[in-house]
Length: 324
Ligand code: PMP
Image (cartoon, rainbow, N blue to C red; front, side, top):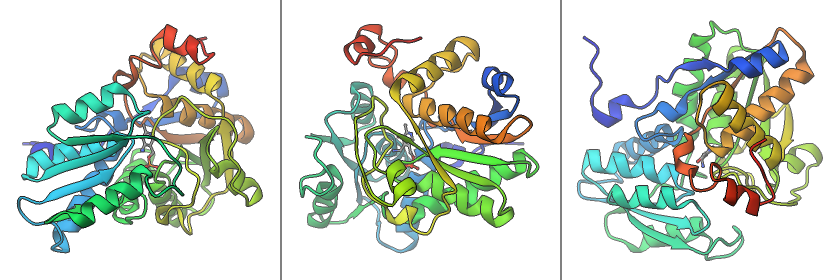
């Protein structure tokens, strides 16, 4: 018998998918870890589960307690599902720039949703800092603190990385992913380097994020912005500290959009915007490394969460973008 134990038992163990059109184009194996198939629909289910289990194990989260988090959406969705499955309450602080689909989903899941103006991290009213203060002021509540809580990257060090290794029989030449908290990139990079120090670990970054310039020049410089959601940062989170970064690749929005439409129309995969950055960077890395290499990346979430934006030609046009 192979029966999963509810939502929690269904997190992880996602397939690794060969992205045919991009593999053929580059002569490399471009492989995407199908994180959109997690029960909450994104890569963040893994971090959400580890963060809650860690708080339970430390005795911080007690029956009837509340999980508070500042999130661009996907972590909140993962947390809200797990809170329902385990009998906790969930309060989510989210920048009001995030897609309506994610806000609606959070409300459907019964989370208390507090949209706030999107302001930089240095501002005390930044959504992450605000969520920390709310948790502190509440009785029987924890702050998930995904950016600096190392249970996040541990999820990927203990599950995502080992799964990829097993699925490829250890034949991985390159690994590339964009970062929000950095948990996915960090956990997988730390695991892969331990297995084989020659695996090239490359950070992908959208325009409007400071990490590309930081890893290229040592300085955080922020130029432009991106229609992608959930990725990019202006600081090095605790999850990203002491993590191998062999190179960084910046992908601009027109390329990310072209990639997600190619995935949709040539590979039959309906993906979110950060996948455009990830697969765009995987293709760039394949071109750098040359044919015959195996490159792994993350298919973070599905396109339905962005239907009214990335898959709406009028919205795209309002941002000066088009599907091709
Ligand atoms: N893609 C999407 C759509 C996300 O929501 C996130 C998380 N915010 C990421 C990528 C990045 O994942 P991580 O937080 O592990 O860096």
